[in-house]
Length: 122
Image (cartoon, rainbow, N blue to C red):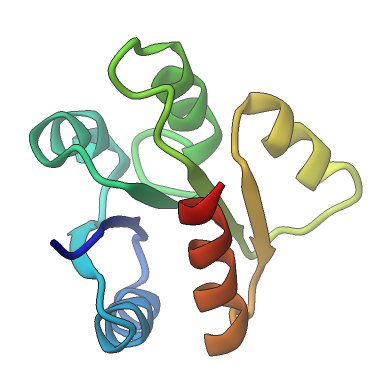
């Protein structure tokens, strides 16, 4: 059975890139483009891992990570935070919220695949 990756990303080009890379690597990809739909989609799909853009419409990825970490059914799902705003202290703040992985954009194919593999094997 293929592992499911829930990709939370509002930028269409990034969604296309992540989908192509992850599907080529053998993962089933489920897309969410708006923060308002993330929690419902996680409950519906129960992914093996989540990639979370931090800057989303309607709710921040950081807040979504915190909410997922509080959920009894979702706190075990590893989250890879992906952000274009890699300011000082940003990674530490995101990891404190509950993300187990972190990538600053731009994302490379090798880095995306290796981070997903590491989260799934931990």
